[in-house]
Image 1 (cartoon, rainbow, N blue to C red):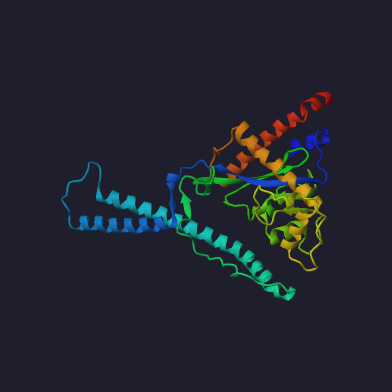
Image 2 (image 1 turned 30 degrees about the vertical axis):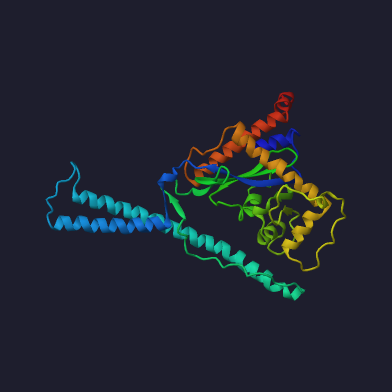
Length: 348
């Protein structure tokens, strides 16, 4: 924060009513994917170890004279298996706790989708297709726990064709200066729940945010309302520009034709309809184009120029500190490009 305040005082960058672009990037955890276990596999291993313990107990009771490798004793082997069972049981308990937390977060979104679907007939709209699928509190068989860094998660890596233990590093970048004004790390594999905490990570002592640009992965009606309105429904003075659905890079001939702004949605329209209209206006299109060219180059510099592609520390608290230091390093580099060193020399 002090670095950003210094940049503001020396007028290297302005932070009043700024537009920020927020996004996340996957950074490898300092963990081995070979030291991970799935919920299903952990249950199978616990059962297997229990059978082996019973076999060892039977051998002990029968005073089995079968020769064993040097140093191996039945009591030690039983203890080793019991310890492993305890570790696997802990892993399953943690996966179950994560599943319940995920269910609680998804339930509110599911209920909002149901309410929006049920309100369509009242507005004279047709309801098509099956309703949204209800979430479940049960863990998925492939949900994983990593023993070297339990707080990391398995996420898509590289071009998305393989998975690695990783964290989701988030950053909010100003459009004008391309300085990082908010950073945080989450173990969530996607960005669905990250809009509100990302905005909250921007220190109000440094800057006032007028607009936030995010891609479709961040969009949800509840998140947009939380950012733009207070609990009492009063506007905060902050506007979100988020793609409602994914779009490919291809543009049709009609997309390039000059068109007037569409009519605003009717009163009582959903947040989704309002956001879709917002991004179809000329002003909305022009502003949203700045998102990709603002935040994605920052991640490119951090990974390719600064060479930061994997955390050295373990645990969410420690990797969050590490990501803060990385973002600080990027900001120092960016401020040098903006001429902070010259301004400091002139101020002395």
